[in-house]
Length: 55
Image 1 (tube, rainbow, N blue to C red):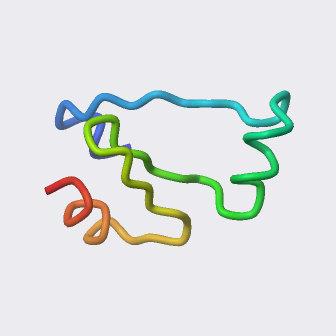
Image 2: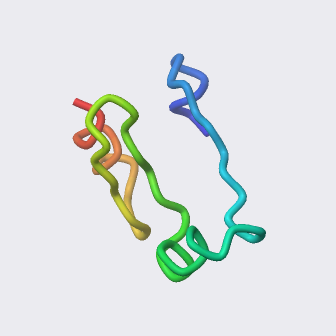
């Protein structure tokens, strides 16, 4: 994960044991979610899209 190497804080959340999260995210994982704004970006995405999402 090259973004982690540049200081991005990442929290991995396992949705397998949470029915609500599995229902919400089951078909679009991985999902990126910004803690500061709550904005989400669903898979599929490219590195350039991640950079834009984080700006």
